[in-house]
Structure formats: C-alpha cells, structure tokens
Length: 41
Image (cartoon, rainbow, N blue to C red; front, side):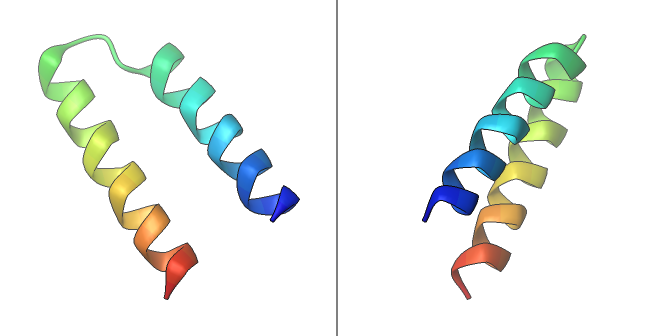
C-alpha cells in the first residue's frame, strides 16, 4: 500500500511539473489512468 501511494505521489508531481499545454495535460491524465489500471490489475 505504501509503495502504491509513493508511486501515485511521484506520478502526481511529475504530471504537475511536466505538462505545459492543455494537450499535454490530456496525455498526462491518460498515462496516469493507464498506469493506475496496470497497478490494480
């Protein structure tokens, strides 16, 4: 559980610092969703 929370926190930080445009935000959200799906399954 702690690893999942740490990964989510790290991913959130990367998303917030890495997206410069609306298009970039969409790609980051999609990547985050896919990452979380992989964690759950």
